[in-house]
Image (cartoon, rainbow, N blue to C red; front, top):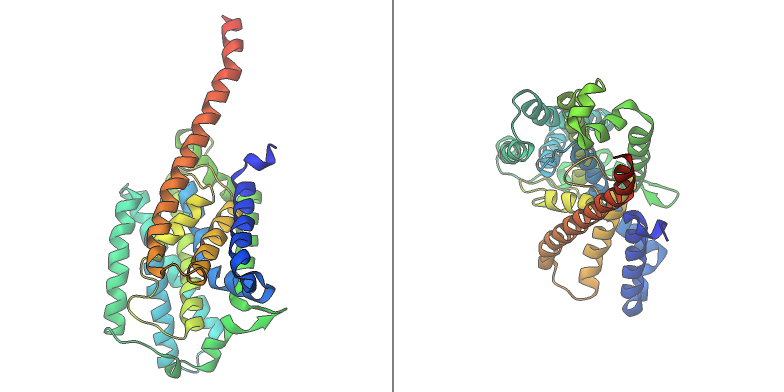
Length: 329
């Protein structure tokens, strides 16, 4: 019973219930091939949610991830058009480095100038979107302008799954190892849980938040290339509004906006839940225009649920420690 109280177990049950509900009307939706396609469609969201998770764990938020994705994706496409002979691995590495640099800008502003993260990332969101327009002159880059090698990587299949899906799987494994088995991963929780105590433990909250932003930016840079190469198009409004889905996936997965609580598995399940909902909407005849409303509602409901869970945990501690404290007196 205790296992069923965890957000991960509840989300897993919710995902299976959602699949069963859709399959009742449309059995083809749960066919293995279609589920693999849904996972592949959700992979960019999974990757960005993983990066966003470590930022939120440190009591910050990164609203510029989708704009980072758009700028790095457009830059990668422009480089491919200008230098068609450049090796794709070099372009990918450049996208990751560029994304990390954009994330570092957020981190520096939060760390050194102590500007609230939501203000910083709202500002850089606008700046990055503006730069996409500047470097592209408002023009689209289409499939016929991209080289075959540039577009092939996310689509190449291994064991029946496209490489885009394998990037999401590898990203999940890497973040699990980072958070569970490294000092940096533990410092994310320490800074988010109690920044003052973290300082006494020799952890720099500002530096830890900076590194979280760099990680989030690097993942956004990688996703920028994967997005543009997979869809074979780069334009000014790439992934417009996608940052809301990323935050929703994290919060649905149990990542506390207050910081210091949540798991990488929860972020994965939150992204999968949202991805299944979005893919199921057209199947059940609901307009895609409801997607933003559903994402926003999911954030509000998840924040309320997280807050109630934390208050219940607080009351249990008081009840458990109260008699001991009275006895001590």
